[in-house]
Length: 582
Image (cartoon, rainbow, N blue to C red):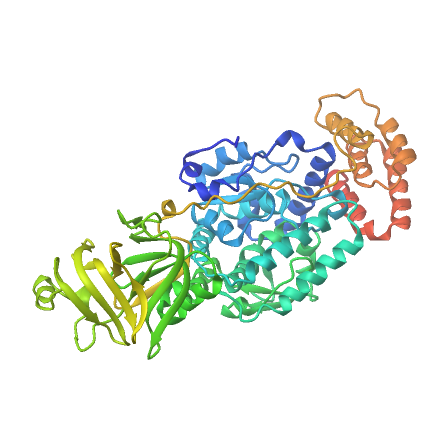
């Protein structure tokens, strides 16, 4: 994988690096550059009055140009001064990975750019949305801190088994809606699948809820008063359509609160309502309030049950600090408390996110199970026992014991050794010739195989992913090319015309006849409007009123034939007139 790294990117774990792809800047066509330039000129002109002040300041601080699609390498040289970095990824990536990148102060930027036909809005992630939307606003330190914190918490949210299926369906829909020449029937079929999945999701998972918070803040957030808010969400900052629509009464404004977590969204359509936060600090307050409801902080029976339902790799942390990672299969409960848990497949034990020696996936290739809680009839938990207490209950090396736990779990065997944490607490006891039963039912039995029993009275945390990232092979992603069918590639006649105009404007070739370019446009590409906008800009800039009027007349004809382009053409003309006509 060829991409230019830096100290921030060097710290990324391998499983995140698998999503990075080269930007391949040379692939962008002159038409792509024109699309970027139009959207950015329009946005900077409009957003300077309706966006949070950090946006315009951030454009300058992050080195994002109005005239050129940003080069990732150039952005990173500037972002490093803000403590951030950016990487190119292939469109949608899993939500947990997206948020984990944020936790490492890394912006993920979909390097594709929207087609001219979708210049006002696209449901697919693209460099306009990511680069011009997300990057500038992180120049605000308070917002950047929120974004990083959101990543730290969000990547720990537990998904449901249905979340990934919906993610794949939405990703597919966004790609084919952006791709040229997609059969409308295919789009309708994909939309129906998304709608069907959304209607049958059941109880929303933590990931679904926190994605809602992310959507209504990072993507589509407003700030200030509900009566006169400013824009800070990247989805709005990068959409010339929705940034204008959201300022009208057609979009309901709601004070931001935890209610946003329970408000779903449709990525393929303009949003009917938006949430307004009074300031960036309040975003962090709501985030922490939400985190207090997550299994990450509540643990317990409900937390481990969420991991079981997710069918994904997750971790529980016990009150001793011992962390058990794996795919959780079942839990046995007693009086509303978990008293035994079991994983299946590769599992590993860790402490403070560092794998315990001899307790990795090789040792626990077929799962890990253990009782938790207190011993029956004993008021002190094993983890709280000092050396004298342990000896008094025969919990020491070389002893044959029968440990009766509350709830009917019994562990019989010979103690071989124990593992302690830094505070001196026993966190693992290793047995040989061990049998584990629950009310007489055998849960585990060994002869020569050793049994490792986790020590902990309670489950204090449960979250997505492994405790120690090095303990599991998480490399399972293959980069896939976004489905696009470019009809006008870099070698097409239309693209060459765009390139000629671009070269003229930037002084690389001033011998080009703009009149000839215009005549070819009218004859061969009568429906193309964006190049006519650029020619109009040059004509007005050079004081060629006759040429400007001719171009304007041609664009009026386009508007008559394609009225849906009217606002785009009018905005392009207005931008030029505002800039050059005094």
